Every structure is written in C-alpha cells, then in structure tokens.
Length: 368
Image (cartoon, rainbow, N blue to C red; front, top):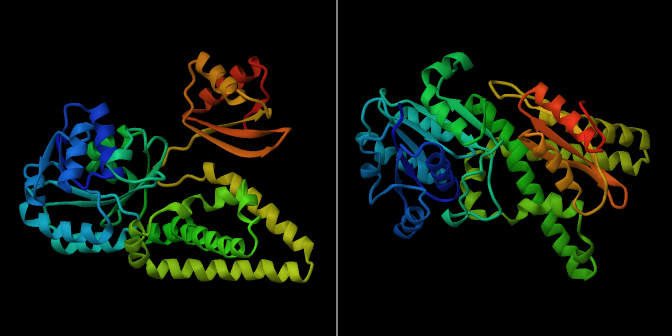
C-alpha cells in the first residue's frame, strides 16, 4: 500500500490533496517541498507531516510523488527527482496540460518508475496554501492519463492503491489519453478562460465611454466572466504547453461566432432559434455524458420558489431522509417566479427516494 507521499508543491491543489488524505488516511506520511514560508503554513494547517529542503530529500522512500507545481516547474522537478526515486515509486502530476509532462516523464524517469498524468478539474477563486480545502475535489472530475494505452480494467488493477487514494478525495475518475485530454481541455477549460478575459476587457473598454455600463453588467455577465479573475501566473505555462489545441479552439469558436453574426445580420431568426435550441439540449446532457470509468450520477430536478430559505427547505428534506446530495446546480431562475435545481445522487434508488422525500415535503420534483 501507499504509505509515504511526497507533495512537490503545497499550494491550493497540493495542500488540498494533503488535507483530504490526512482526513481519510491519517496513517499516511506526507512530506512537502515548497518555499519555506509555504511549508510553515502547510505544517501549521496539517496539510503535511514533514518538510523537505530539497526535492531529492522529499522523494526519499516515497511510495507516491505528486508534482503539484506549474508545468515548467514540474518538468524541472522530474529531472531533479529521477535519480533519487526508489524502484516502484509512482509519479503523478496535477497540471491541466498533459502531453508535455508525459513526454518528459518517458525520457527522464527510470523504467521502474511509472508515471500517470493527473488533472483534478477543481479550483478556487484564490490560490495558495491559505485557501487549501479538504473538500475541494468533492464530486470534481479527476482525469488520469497513462503513458501508454490501457483499458480501464487493466489500469485499475495496476494502480489500485493510487486510484483508491484519489477516490478518497471525493473526486470522480475519468481515464483519457494525453492528446485527447489536451484537445478537450483546450475547448472546455482553456478557451473559456480566454473568452472571459476578452469579454471582461471588452466591457472595460465600453465602460470607459459610458460609466453606466459596468454597474449594469450583472447576472449572466458576471457568471460568464467569473474566471477572468484568475491570475496570469497560473495560465502562462498552460497557454504555452497547449498552444496548438488552444489556437484550434479559438479558430473554431471565431468561426462559430461569425456564423451567428451572419445569421443575425440576415435576420435569419429560424436558424438562430435552432442554434438556441441545440445549445439548450446539449447543455442539459453535460452532467449525464460519462465515459471511461467516470461513475454517472442519477439526477433529480426540483422546482424552487423565489423566496428566502427555499434551498434550505429542499436540502433539509433530503437531510431528514438521510439522503446525500453528490452534486447540485442551479439550471435557471426567473426573479419572482423561481427556478430549477438539478440534484445528483450516486444511485437511481437514492434519486427515487429523493423525489419521494421532496414531494412529501411539498416540492415539485422529478427524474428526467
């Protein structure tokens, strides 16, 4: 079993992993490597048990090494630790670009040290160990990318202990090859970040000419631009490491946006209506579209009135029935009339029980 883990980087992600594992596996020994002041905070918060002044010291006798640093730093760390790993030690990372780090791992790591790329698709508005959270990965998708093609069954058998550790964080595992991951991440993660930046800066320019503009930019605009607050420091390596796929995604999106512009200029409302309907239908499939060994959730939709305490009443009814919610999303809301929440549960039977509990509490709920 994995007993000793080296966390090379103890910021938001590394620190949150440490806190989650300490919570569920107090028998583990977690060794951290980072700047001295970061390690001081990590020890104080119990995200790690020991500190190391050098990467080589951190990985000494480790069963698992987690590279929780930006891409360029992770590549340098791979070279630094390679001569000091004991045979059989598994190495993984947590970056959102997989091809460069997997390619480098193939070159620098000894054959007896397997590498599995990792990407926990979770984050927070602010980074650093001060904002680490043991619940950060609850219900988040955690992508794993092996260095060679392998079936989910064979991968699970080969890395059972590692998979168990990831699942202890509450994450939902998803197996992908690195190229496929990077192509998808460019479209669903990296492109939205750039669009949020562009939209926010576009609005800022308009706000310079009309000071009423930004005060009215609420609701959907704020939702779409929330991630524009992300610091460039955490995106620099991502943009460089996945440049090709990001450029493809930007080009594809520009074409799609231009197509909508043409339809509007030509007053082709039928085509625009079809685009809206397609977007709505596809959007509703996102929570149910599962592949690899990602465990699907059973869904329940519940109507909520627009009044204080409504969400408390919904969750309270499920709490009284001892039913755990694994995922929750506000799908739509109209001021004065209410909205609809999507709730996710681990099994169909729990979803059915949730519908019964909610209906008994006087709420309109149904399975899709």
